[in-house]
Image (tube, rainbow, N blue to C red; front, side, top):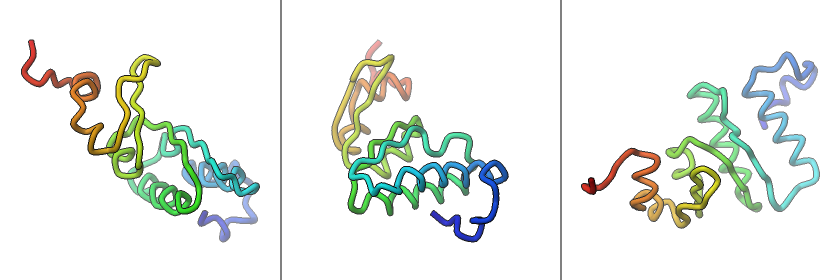
Length: 117
């Protein structure tokens, strides 16, 4: 998780991104087959987000990751299968390619009505 050099620091003095990495490290102690992450890049800048994405990619080798995230570009780049919710209701599911071309997803999240009035 890239925290070894900071092993003597108290967690509250770590940066926000480092604290998120520590949370994931704690979750990994039992070597889970399923890892649930809720907005792992929330509050991070672009560089920290990029580092977290690399960590998630590495963690996905050998386990399933259930990721809740609002950053569509990140989800599309990381996921094999995506479920899209809107107001708590499932509006689409499929591969990243299927989600990108789904008319309802485009309408709800991109404000596109595909020519329909």
